[in-house]
Length: 184
Image (cartoon, rainbow, N blue to C red; front, side, top):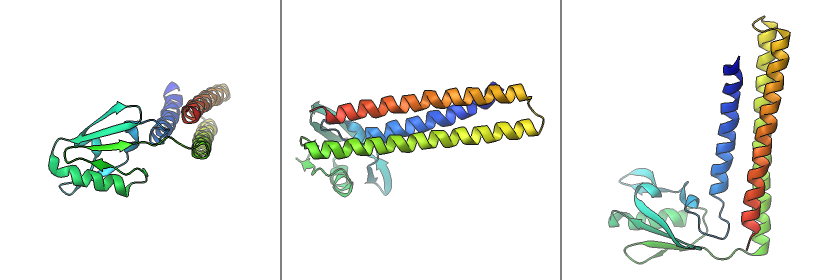
């Protein structure tokens, strides 16, 4: 019955990975290339991630440098950044684009920290929903005579421990991201 628990563990792992990816796109005052992850560039008619058309580097703590391999895509990259919700005006020198991240105000840091907490709560709700689905399946399996009552109790206990473990991991991610945002 280990397959059963590992199926739900995979689902919880995906929830955590999704949260990590969302946190990566929240900018925290210092330059993080992951803020570009969701931005797509029109590259010969196909929406393409910036990292696939350019070299992205962080030469200084608050600067991201984007150097397209094909200079003809420079304007498209600039346009994609301007149309995104990044809120930073790119400076284009004809060969590369620089994004300079301003220092965050105290108020903006607090807003971002609240947003991080909200995303963390949503992830915990998702984890609890996975637990509920697993427990419903365990009950169905027991009713159908596929598992014994002892197996049911063991599976429910395993799922509960799994849920607690992932809720704790979410809390750690929220705490780390909040600390990163609030650190000036």
